[in-house]
Image (cartoon, rainbow over all chains, first blue to last red; front, top):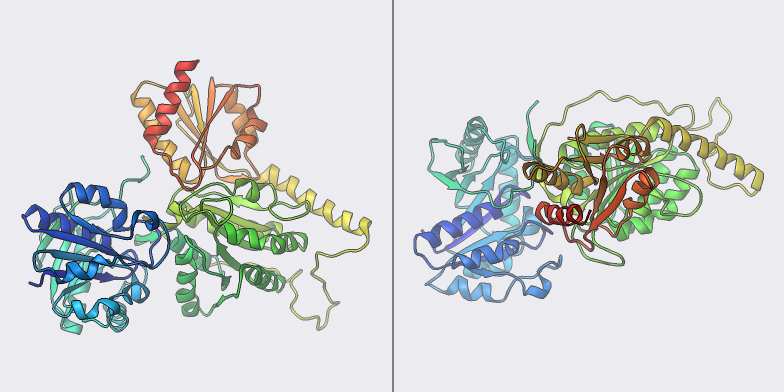
Length: 216
Length: 350
């Protein structure tokens, strides 16, 4: 496994949620971890909003300087390149959505030649209903990012309304994508407290970005 | 019907398409760009027209054009962009044309910031442009409700031949929730007034111009008659745990849903608190609020602005009960905890 991890996908596919969980899990295992917010498209719900929590857990957060954190400026912290080259750190790159967000990877390309690149899929998001459509997105985003996707991630979910069937449905479609593009599936994402054992490894996560749902 | 995860902006876009909107003209501004992007991708799939205008001023006038020929048209923007559209909206209102606007409000005034706000309430409900006109203003508080209200916005805009506005805020625009969007057969008939070519009929005129003051006043009276009818027939609101409420929270949109959590916290603490959530901000549901005001000891209005809706609460409830206010501005979103704390201070001060 490479020390640098990149999460790509469409808007709202769950890249940030998975990046945070991925960083937390590896830090928990005793690894030195840095998480880089290189999202230049989203205006809310970015890694930088969880800076305090991540730092308290001993994770280095590479985000724009405090003064620019709430700006919609395409800023990438200069320290990212250093950490990508630092053999002591596992680096998680949370990339912005779609090809517009992924385009920033072009500037980091020479440091990412051996990186593990994950493509995150939620089949319950618009434009992701079929394997064909998802393959199209992967091709488009690979071109924009000048990078090859190494693994697929099934993150099919409906937030707190996720059922086993939703994850399973995602698994089936992602499996099809895997066959069509010859890209292996890394894992199914399953958020607490749901239980699911599928064909692929399960990556259990806690949802940090949710928390404003309507009380019944 | 399969549920999918959508951002508020995307859900508004899809709902517009379901409602038969095939014309979208817009100009980018954060935090609503996902809506323009969604329409740019979706409209070509359904044979519609997406056009990125050169400015908000251009976009609103493109809407004016599309509406003149009787087509369902929509644009979306955020606060400073909505200010730029005001002149065109006033023209559209005077010309009595249906059109749907979306303002995903951000912190202001001025260029402000890109965080969620409700600071455009006055502009939306009291006429942001010039002249005696009104917008139909709908304020969703969940992504699912954004779907329903977008469809309703097109219906009401057609029914009254008047522009309608979805007043959202950055948070509602950006948050994702599971939604169900039902396919519908939509038919609408604007053939009695739309500019469709004057072959075999007398020519029609769409205008907001009349140099004769008596003629212009007549146009104004028609508008006023329409607004009185809206005020009679269209107010919509939600009451949450108001049956036995002794204290009432009044809040709309995102703050409305935050206040639902406050109601829950307060009830766990033994306080009988309910929520009044206006859904139409114009026409404002004055009467039901007036009725509730007679039964409660206090109304606490909560906003992400300086006390704008507060003025409408006072119009409904002044002298009927104690009226208090709590607000955050400039893109700061109040938490249920801080609202509850403020409520407790007020209760103790009684």
